[in-house]
Image (cartoon, rainbow, N blue to C red):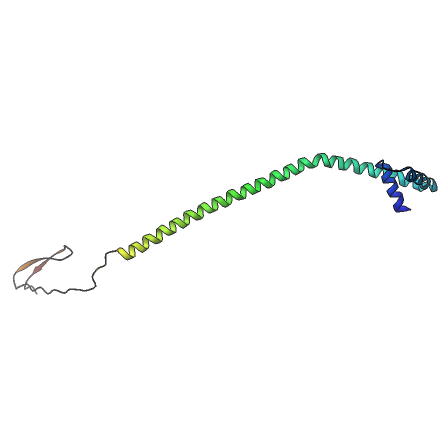
Length: 147
């Protein structure tokens, strides 16, 4: 009867109780004095829960709005941060490409000096001075016969 009594009290509270159930509830209340106390306590609990959930329903939309706004801010912030990272990566990649191309061009198109060395022997007669112009446009003065 305990489970059934709670169901009857709930039906009475929600005003969905039938005539037969109402009669059964009255009989249960008259059966023992503790049942009336149990009935009052259960009704108080149901009233309290009704007012609590009523307040929660009023507060809930505002709370959900705040939560959704917070989530949207985080999502937008993440998109902006990812966008900034992509821009920095693009800049770094372009600098790397330009640097690599420049290095390749420098190595493959720089003037290559000839590997063959030409030796020339110049003999300056004794007592004569000579001025010699080298291929790199430097000038050498030779004095002859000085020991």
